Image (cartoon, rainbow, N blue to C red; front, side, top):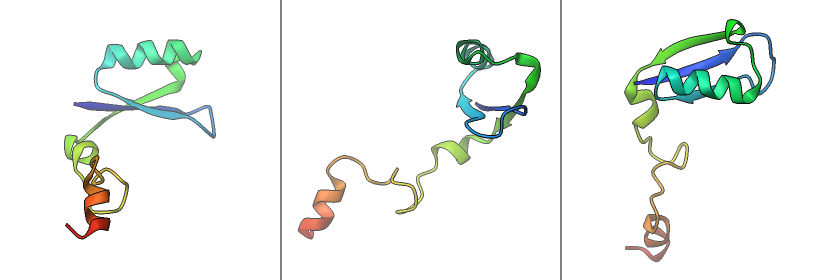
Length: 72
């Protein structure tokens, strides 16, 4: 389960993702945000863990990019 936390009072640098609710609250406090200003949304697991081909770099596992350059 992944939770996206978004601070509705800030315009930039206003969101992050965590796996548990207590971790989200701990991160909010470490950033100095007010918990009442934040909105919590549960994200589908496949939105975070799915590897999309060549779109975001998550498909480039270590060594794979070099193997492709070498033609393997």
